[in-house]
Image (cartoon, rainbow, N blue to C red; front, side, top):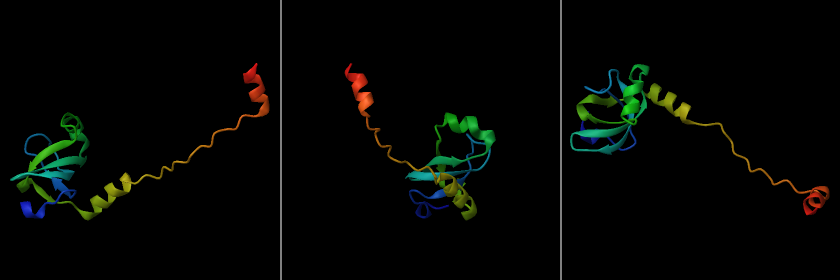
Length: 104
């Protein structure tokens, strides 16, 4: 892949010549002259310890980057969406009985 083809926030397929044994997906965080800093977002279980040691970040040469399959990107985006809803909880009003007990 060429430097001109790489943009910040792109999700790319990558391979590491040294640290990781299997290909992985990463999100581009910074672009250098011959490489890019990727946040590792999807990887093989065999590389779990190495990814943890790298704090989920790795610098990869452009020659080891390629466009990620659209199917895989959609899978990751679906996992990232959360169905959690936050609701405000109203404070319970003190009843007159509770107020009388506290004043004693």
